[in-house]
Image (cartoon, rainbow, N blue to C red):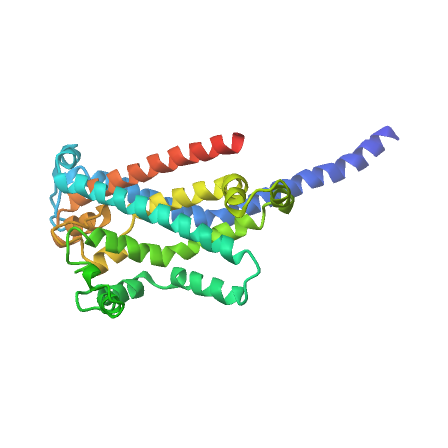
Length: 308
């Protein structure tokens, strides 16, 4: 009798184990196409690029010359590379700070009872979904010495502020930062809008009961609770600044006088226009390493903030 009971209870258990194994195998099978795509294109591309970075190659010759770490030593002595890094740092600092500040301000304003709030939200977010090529083409016209920006300044009696916005080496980088701010502030706005909806209203009500004004409530209650959103925007902003290419190439092309040269535009010029494929590959590997280091550091800071 006991043997019959064991056999009857053991059979369903074995069937369940078999079903679980089959389900896991099915899940792995669904992952295979994605894994093939990532491994076959992304990782293979990185490894191939790493190999090319050790060559003196124009991308065409069937007999490239191996130079080992020569390209990387050249990068360390390249003033254009260090200038591009400084441009990225300035561009990133301006765009990240302004986008976060303006995005938070707009989120706070539209978080209250505003007539037509949905329409205003859509207007703020529309630039985010526009193609960078379209935005760049429009602003290249707007920012010309005879463009609409200077026309508006003249009409407002502010002719003293007219500039050759993208033709002046002292101003061009800041003009590009303004274009980036116009396009991506809506992204910060949406994230802050979502984060504000998660704040406990009881905290705000308690602050108001204690006599805290609007500024003190925002500074001491709202802003600290938005810390995860701040860190997310900083991370995406840093990586975005590092890989910015379209607006720079389409508006200034890295000029005038390399005053807006970024790593991405420098890599493009070296690899595509000047046929220094090995050197361009080394530059791209350095950019990849910079992105990985910055991502690891900021992710670690994010984890530390979560633990606190």
